[in-house]
Image (tube, rainbow, N blue to C red):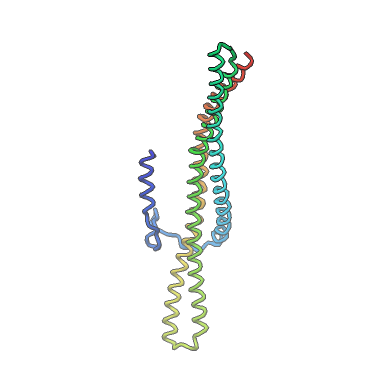
Length: 249
């Protein structure tokens, strides 16, 4: 998307309210899987640990790239300044008819390096940093799904404990009230179990979907970037080699 379109879309998605009722969850086939799968129960614990580690590394990656970009901006500025000083020296010698070309060569050499640092800075800041920033944000959303499941599991366990407590106190209740309350509690527990199983299945499926999405996106992005970046760098370094060879002339 163009930047203006992208900013509008960001506002649109930012204002979407979180779905909290099972009946409002979207489904392509109109069905929600509320079956308990023992394998998903085990996988969810595994996926959660993996996502925590990935998020931590992506945060470190973001901070490290920011630091590298900052240093490259400084290098770009300093090399430009160095090039200007060499150019001033070259002009001074030329104005006094002292024919020394090395200062001009040094000036061009420094400015060429400055261009390379600027290219590397732009590549890291725009193509790499922003890309992985949104990769991490997607993992943040996956972690929220894990949290939804954990909260639903706590609610389910609460109803299970409630029923156990109710059965222990059977002798202290009238039979009709006991059975009525037991049915009510059992109904709530069954609802909580369906929600819990759905959220467990959803979190596992969404993690695998995002994993496949990231794999394809990495391949697509860097597959498209690499030829252009390689050609640009090759041209810049060829110019730099020519400048260095000028010192021998």
